Structure formats: C-alpha cells, structure tokens
Image 1: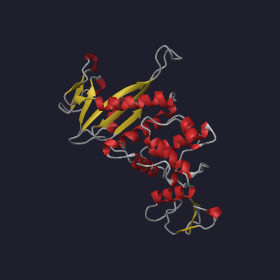
Image 2: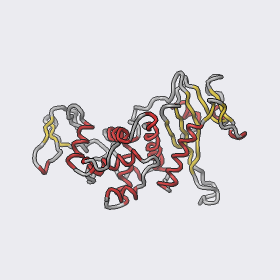
Image 3: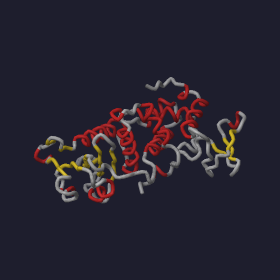
Image 4: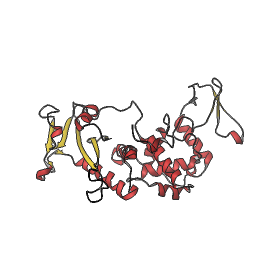
Length: 300
C-alpha cells in the first residue's frame, strides 16, 4: 500500500525522478524529434532540463504530456493522480484544491480534467470488447433531471451506453447515434451477448449468442443470463456523479466516463492495487495535450 508520506508526494526532486523513471525506464529520448542523443543539463536554474544534441531543443519530463505548461509542482501532480486513481467514486476539484493547497478552484478543476485525459485510452488503441468464449453485457442508462426540475419541457436526458466483458473491461460511450451502431463499432461479434429486453438488441447476433432478461416483468437474472455486472458499474458511476461531483455538464461527461472506466478496468479484482493504478495513469500522460479552452468546448 502506498503511503502519502512517501518523498515523491512532497519533494520536487524525488517527484521529478519518479516521473522521469516512469516515462523513460531505459533511456531518455527527445519528445521533440525522437533522438536518443540527449544530455542532462546542469545547474539549479535548469534542474530537470534536457538538451537534444540533434534538434537542439530543450525539454523536461513535462514536455509532450498533459502536464506541459503547468505551473503546478510535480509532487502535487503525483499526489493528485494517486488520489484520483484510488478514490472509487472520484474526487471533486474542491477537495483536490484543499488537499493539495492549490490557489483556486479553477486550477484544481483543470488539473483534474488533464488527469482524466491521461486515464482515457490512447487514440488508436481501442479494440472491440469480448471475443470467442467470452460473455459481454450491454445496456444503456440515462442521466438527467426529473420532469419537474427540467428547465425546458422538451429537455432530454443524456444517454450513456456501456459494454462490459465479464471478468474484463468496461467501455462507455455517450450519445452515440444509435445503440446498434455502438454495438457494431465496439462489440466483438464472436462474443455471447447479454442484454435486457430492449428491441434495439434483437436480431444482431445468431440465435444462441444473444440472450436477454425482461426487466418489465421483474426478471433480473435467469442463471447466467443477466446484466447485473453493468448495473453495478452504473450504480457506482451515478453515486459518484451525485455524491462527489454533484453537477456535470454534458460537454465534460465523456472525460468523467473515461475516469470511471479506467478505475473499473484497473480494479482490485484484477489484482491492480492503488499504486499500480496510479502508475498506469501516469504512463497515460504522455502524448496527450489538453489546453484550458478544450474542456470548455463541446465534445467533437
């Protein structure tokens, strides 16, 4: 178990060494041109800075990561990553601000979004869920206000669609064109599919590969036929939104989903403990960049 008193959470030099070891476990390479011909610059004013002999560019362990151009000390970044990776229902920006001693809520809010970006799968790394001999559950849930609290009569709740491989990973998608198109994109069609009785799931797989339970008749499980794994995931996600974050704008929801997906996909049941989960999140910081303007723009 990781102790929050460890030096890397309080000492800037130890934090920098930890991040450098995580990013370059074998040999430092230039994130600007890829060259291995780099040198560590000396002097207190250039602590942690490298010089590439090929492109003559200077860089640090922040360059080319979600931490680039951030003035927040590295040890606070490591502590924030650990806290978000180990909190089952997430951690609010207000709580991060208090625990890390950050100057403003906005700073903590943006920092948390950058960490969620690190937790999201790398572009091009996503493969279909499931496979031959594997069971996948698919279901959708809705996030929104009750009819009494909606500002507009025709205001629609937000649709979240998820797939989970039993004993494996979960993947959540927000407002896909249709459930069927999401299945075609994210499901390995050699899987056994378990759903509820919704019409959109019918006739997508050969007879025997798709089984369902009828929630309208209070049927929640029939032997191995159920969607309880996914219902449990939705329960944790919704309790996190209501109890921790309280209000999430639709344009930010995909990042919160990435956060909850990440923790589920690196859970204790898969023998991934807090320290390993934080280490995986740290490896995800590279090759991603998030500016302050981007979280405030609608999801593409």
